[in-house]
Image (cartoon, rainbow, N blue to C red; front, side, top):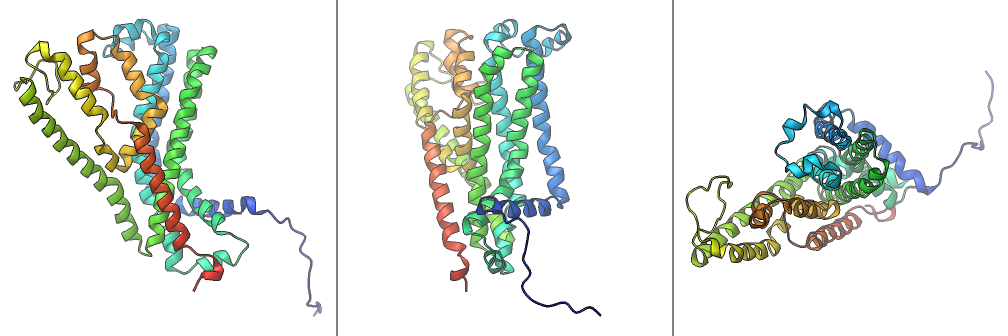
Length: 372
């Protein structure tokens, strides 16, 4: 039997710096999450709107080129204003803005569900099994731990928001063959990517903070549902009450149609006296611009910031100019556009939630020298 001297043996491996140590935490977490079959199905479902976005921008690229291959498709675009169809190059930016806006609104819901599936156990499970001493016994700082856990959430949100945004831009440019136009639409794609990053930062840090507050995964999931779903319901209730109050106020100032108006959506408020039309719309316009009730909703705040980045309301305003003067503002107020309150109100709420989340993380997850 050979005898080996027991003593110090020099290690000749490569020691990585602190800069990338969070990546090990992230890669392991992503590998574990992919074992969840429901998560994989959810990702495939979330890619369906992305496929529709790619197809929509590709078809619009062919419409811009006036390709013969889309002659049979134009008949399905009759819901658009004829000026948009026959002069597509002049309204290309607006179509891109609205396409990305609808896509991000749908993916925001999928992002909330992904966070609900991925996020509750990221820190809560480590607290439950007392794994933090094992983490911090290594040369791992708290910031490395937090960034690694956050990167797990950001990876899955990016898979359904940022990656499809880039792919759709590439296909839209390739099908339009308009390289000058591609530079014109590039800021829209960059804005969509920035919006995706805001969703990652806001939703990711908030979920980590909730996960650090409890060792029970169910409690964390319920807290997230409360912040997402219940705040949305409360916002809708406040909106309905506000709408009813406006209705009552209108009845004192303007005669209102109670019977349905041909071509008007259900519940539309149309003044019976056309001489009061301008005053009526001005009153409603100011009410919309000062309506703060969607600030209560987490997804409402994210949507408002996203609409500002993508220029959704500006796009609707330009398209509304193609309509008759009398119906422009009514079109914006009732059918399209909004919310119209200042975007920085929503940004302030999201910034406050971010600061609160980072404070909770700093207080809940302590370094090894402070662990008991």
